[in-house]
Length: 328
Ligand code: GYE
Image 1 (cartoon, rainbow, N blue to C red):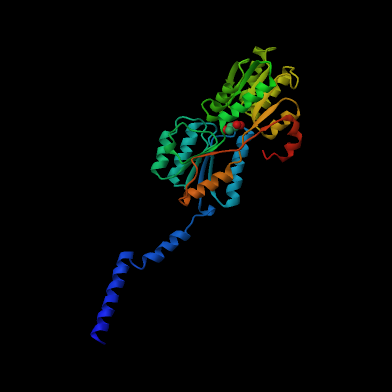
Image 2 (tube, rainbow, N blue to C red):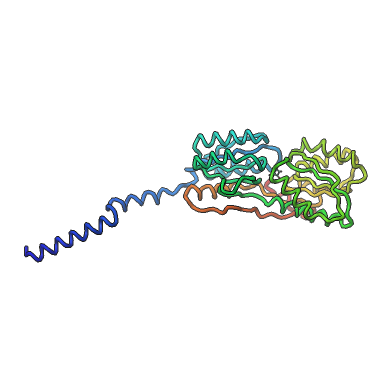
């Protein structure tokens, strides 16, 4: 071998080792491949859903949506029912953090009081998606909120009442759970939209629950007998309780106008029977969307910080035709 050839060979060897050391060891390249192929799938997901309770048909449909979707996709769902108590939701969340779930989806019963447990989830690096009602905690404490625009729902209800009582009148409100984003938002939007010639005579909570709303409705019908032109009821289940109370008090369908929220089958039936004149839709079927968001988070993908559900208002004219198509 000539001296020149030897020198050239040496130069090539040096250059190659230089390039290799600059790029890292050759073993580094194949090491990246398993990471890319380890994209998480639904079957790898453990999702915590500390449901707030079972107070309404809306809630039952919401629970079913999560359970059915999890089953279909093969997601391991850690489900619990807090029976409307925030402390139960918080302990369920803590158990999920302990267990090391992948994602927590939280439907908060009320808006305030979540900071500590949200911080604990953050410290454990478990992302939280707020579902349905909102929280008052800082936006940095959770990844996203998906649900309805409750203020908008209240505004829609106010517009319907304005149309139903063009000459003004007196209305009564039975609101949802005190301190919940759903009740606060609906009450706010309603007041912002209501015409000046309509007076809210009284407002009491029925906790989104028909059993609790019934005595409130009975007391209202007694106390304000002959003075009531309209009812704004924060959900269909409580509106059904109002119908029962009106029947007992001898009020005929449509004599007192009623605007309700949710758009459940019960709501559609009340429209068919002439008791409810407008039902503002609120969609509980959030399971598929939430699980899609959770999977994205598990794969390090970005998701929107606020996802609002698209909703409409239903009226008696189409109620009979639409009732068989309703899923909840
Ligand atoms: O309207 C009511 C339920 O938070 C939007 O909660 C939800 C409300 C819904 O109990 O029926």
